[in-house]
Length: 65
Image (cartoon, rainbow, N blue to C red; front, side, top):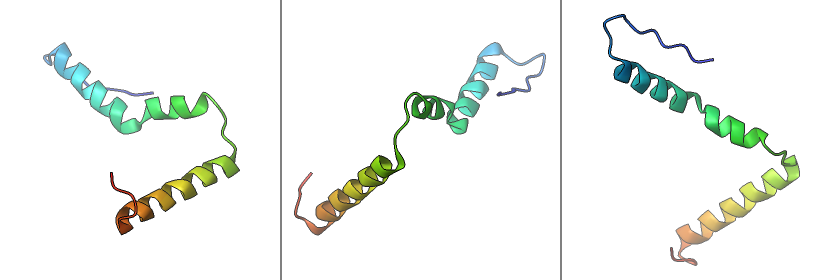
């Protein structure tokens, strides 16, 4: 749960801006999206390996972006 300490004289817009920054830093939305569906560890690992292979090919010049 995010808690924002706001002073009485502080504008509501500033408080909302602080809340949005904290929300973004906490990465709550990313966690919710991850929890929507279960991905097996082997599939996660395969995706990481394929991504690494792609990055190596781009770095070596075999694939142009």
